[in-house]
Length: 342
Image (cartoon, rainbow, N blue to C red; front, side, top):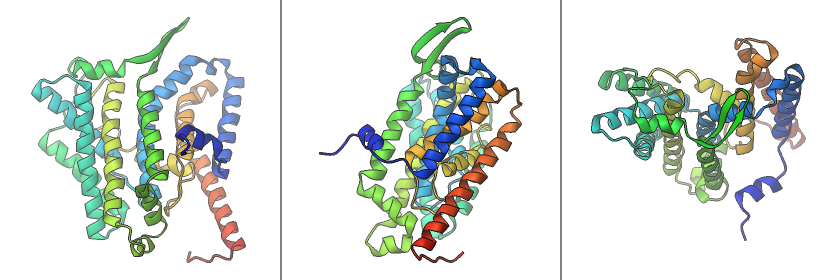
């Protein structure tokens, strides 16, 4: 009998990187709480879940790409283009339905991801170079064909605004009314789906296999093109979903926003233990990396520091984490007499 995703995650031993990140998060939370007791509040927790939900969706897509041995920097452009096309379609057709918005954005994201996969496979170029190019192409095509007009909350479809303001539960405090966003169950469902696809299907094993060695995977009979199509279509679909969450969260449709955040999100997933060389990465590690990314960004005010310190703290954790991870790998390789080219 197969175990449930929750039981499987709880029964497995945490990796060294996950323990290390957990210790950093606990130590940082204690320091912030001692400095400012207001940090320990339900509204702070709800606010972090609200602002971090979309980032977690992108991080799950980035994790799948990194495990496959690639690097995708076009996912923020895919998110913006997919979300913007969806909003423009709703306005043009007079359709005001959040499900319609999500379906259109996911389909557009999936198609753009398929283009990435086909270019990477047939051009035999680095994934970084291809997605760097498509990032500009996608956004440029959108600007040429649709323009870059922004829409205020009053011009947006009402269902989109309502979706961003919907809560599962609300609480009333002296500071006001705070709610737990409806984004949370969506992110949890996607995390479980990603876990199932990666760890409980042959397709997921193929992703790990081509990430470890594409040539060896091909010799074993793995269909590399089909696997890459899954990787980049799945990442594109999640980016499309993120586009709708992002605009509904902002309550403002701006087709030039979000782009530029891709390196921070990739860094968050790498901090979580995903190897840039492929074949390794965990969902829990990606989650902890995103928590650190959002924690520094949202709580520096409690320490009396400006947001300018965010880059310093996050970069320091990134360098130390990568240094620790690759030193452990070198020691392990030396112990097992594994020698690889530098």
